[in-house]
Length: 317
Picture 1 (cartoon, rainbow, N blue to C red):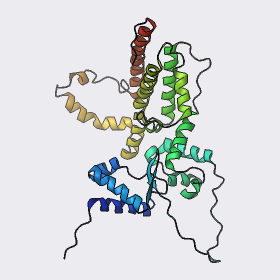
Picture 2 (picture 1 turned 180 degrees about the vertical axis):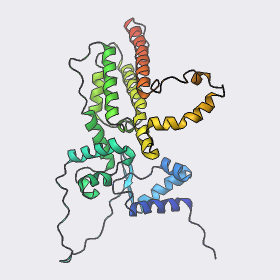
Picture 3 (picture 1 turned 135 degrees about the vertical axis):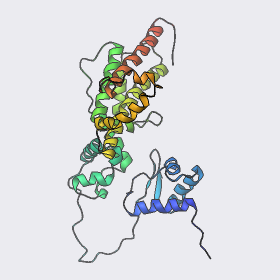
Picture 4 (picture 1 turned 45 degrees about the vertical axis):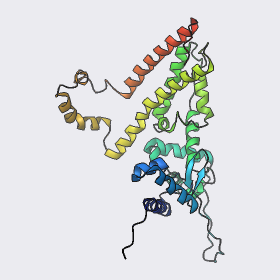
C-alpha cells in the first residue's frame, strides 16, 4: 500500500528541524515568522501558524515576548566524564558585552544585517557561538545593543543651531551620516514596531528641541515624519551593499550593464519624463541628491505648518 505524503505543515517542521540540527539556526536565533513561512513555502497563514505551534510543542523553539519565536536551548542529560574526556573547557577569550557588540557592528557594516549571526560574530574571536551567550541573550538583543551603540556615536554640534528649521536639518544630517557609516541601521529601525532605544530617542529630542507652539501629538508626527524620511531614503545603502555582494558588481558597473535595456525603453517614446534626463551625468540622481532635495521640500512643508500655528491658525496633525 502506497504511503501518503506528509501534510505540508509537517514537511516545513522537518525542514526547520534540519536547519536547527545542521547549526544553520543556533540557540537564540529567530526562526521564520508565520509571514516568512507563507512566503517561503507558499502555504496559508493557518498552516504557518500550525508549524510554529508544532515546533513549540516539540520543544525546538520558544516564544520570546517582544522578540518572536527563537530556537530553544536543547537540554542534554548530564553524564560522567571519563579521564580521557576531561579537557580544559573553552574560555571566552576575554570577551565582554562591549567587545561582542563592536565585533557584530563590524560584521554588519561589511556584510549587512543578513550576514550577521551569532556564529559569524563568534568567528571573529575564534570561539564557539555559545561563548557569546554569556554576554548577550540572543541575536535580537545583540542587534538592539548594536543599534544603541551606533546612535551613541552621534555628537550633536556645539553650539546647537538656534532656529527650529536649522535644528531639524542638523538632526536629519546627523542621522544621514550615521546611516552611511552603518548601512544596516536604517533597515533595522521600525516605525510600526519601535524598539526601546534611549540613545536614538535622545537624538530625536535634540532635533525637535527648538520647535515651539506645537501640541505634543503634532510634534511627534513632525519628528517621526522626519525620521522616517531619512531612514527610508538611507535604506538604499544596505540594499546596494547586499546587491553588490550578490552580483559582484558595484553600482556603476550594474548601471552600465543596464544601459542597453533602458535605452530600448526610452527609445519607445512612451516615457518622455525619463527621456528628458537621458545623457545627463550619472551622478545627477543619487541617494545623496534625493536626500538633499527631499529634506529641503519636507522642511518647506514644516515651515508652512509652523508659520500657520504661530499665526494662530491651527493646522495640527
